Amino acid sequence: MTSKENPAGPRSLELNVELPEGTINARVDVPEGPMRLVEFTSSVLVLSSEVAAMGERQVAKQDYKVSCRKGCGACCRQLIPLAPTEAVMIAELLDNLPSELQARVRDRFERAEERLRETGLWDKLCALDDPDVSEEEMIRITREYFELGLACPFLEDEACTIHELRPSACREYLVVSPAEHCSNPYQAGITRVPISLRLSKALAELHAELFAVSPRLVPLTKALRFERDNPRIRGLGADGAQLLQMFSAHLRRAIN
Ligand code: SF4
Image 1 (cartoon, protein in one colour):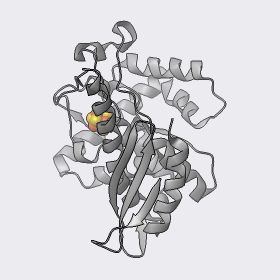
Image 2 (cartoon, helix red, strand yellow; image 1 turned 180 degrees about the horizontal axis):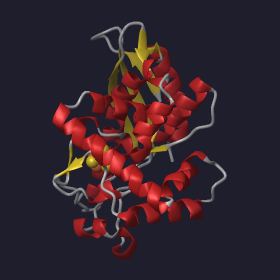
Image 3 (cartoon, helix red, strand yellow; image 1 turned 90 degrees about the vertical axis):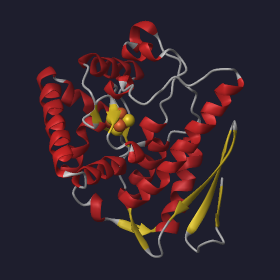
Image 4 (tube, helix red, strand yellow; image 1 turned 180 degrees about the vertical axis):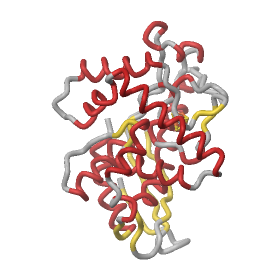
């Protein structure tokens, strides 16, 4: 992985990520001077889309076609893991939505929390923080979550209301199996497009390094709560180029 200054602008940096299946070239715009972590997070999401596009090209070589389409939000009932700064980004994004849409989304977040608390899953989701929780337990929690049928609060008419700024896990989730299988993946089975880099993992590691904490992921349905409990994150920042350099090291380690 390399990063170099782009001649078009002193802080428009080109990031070359070498994956097993090829190299991704993405340009990340960082301002002169300090940059908020939330802004940094939004600006590197483009990498996730590039990784997914690379995966799509790979499966196309084997004559597979991605079956994900606008209007199919079946995967938006799954547990979506976010890096902490993505959770804060989501909260900020919500603050800036038009008031009517914002009210509807906030209401859905509240109802999702109520439902998760009723079923006892709210506390179990803390397992995402715990590196000692076994993979079997994580799979059990993920399945229990899916079986609740809770749609993501940002989903309306089976379409994402924040599509342009959706988190990395949503960008990286593509399937080649029939779309109808996604409504019941534990029975019918689904075939995902292989993705060799999880951006949320690298962002979570960057957050852990900056705050001297253990890496953690936040379920999307808990994003607003996480932001309320961690109000400092929204305003914090650092030099953009320096952040990108630190992030690059974590990206390299996040490649499968
Ligand atoms: S953020 Fe958008 S794409 Fe992601 S789960 Fe929610 S509705 Fe679906």
